[in-house]
Structure formats: structure tokens, C-alpha cells
Image 1 (cartoon, helix red, strand yellow):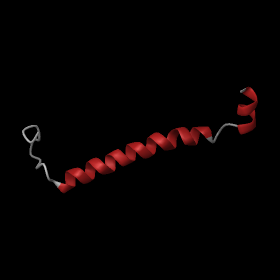
Image 2 (cartoon, one colour):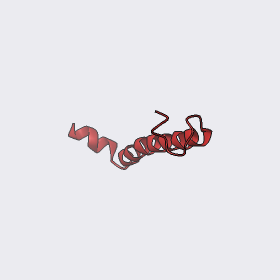
Image 3 (spheres, rainbow, N blue to C red):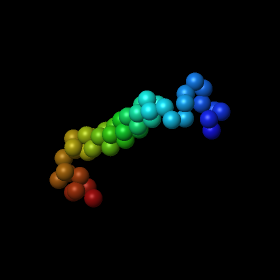
Image 4 (cartoon, one colour):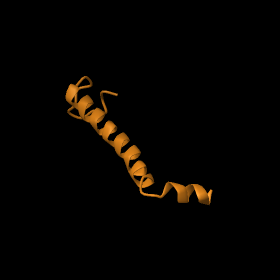
Amino acid sequence: MSQLLFDVQPTDPLTYGVVLVGAVLVGVLAAWMPARRATRIDLLAALRNE
């Protein structure tokens, strides 16, 4: 695996930090966008249609 890393050490803490922040950001956006959309609908109207 270390042969695939170009100019990056396998134990580079900056790389781990950037990847961790990126993964958390994607996870937050993946949860926040549908939740925001769900709050815009009328709950009673949605339940009546079911």
C-alpha cells in the first residue's frame, strides 16, 4: 500500500485528519439534507396520504 502513496507517508497525521474531516462532512451533509427536506412538508397531510 505504501507504494501507492505519492509523496505521503503512511503515518502522516495531516492526511488522516483531512480524510476524517472530509468523511464527517459528507456524513453530516448526507443526514442533514434529507432531514431539512422532511421538515418542510406538512406532517398531517403526509400522514393522511398514507
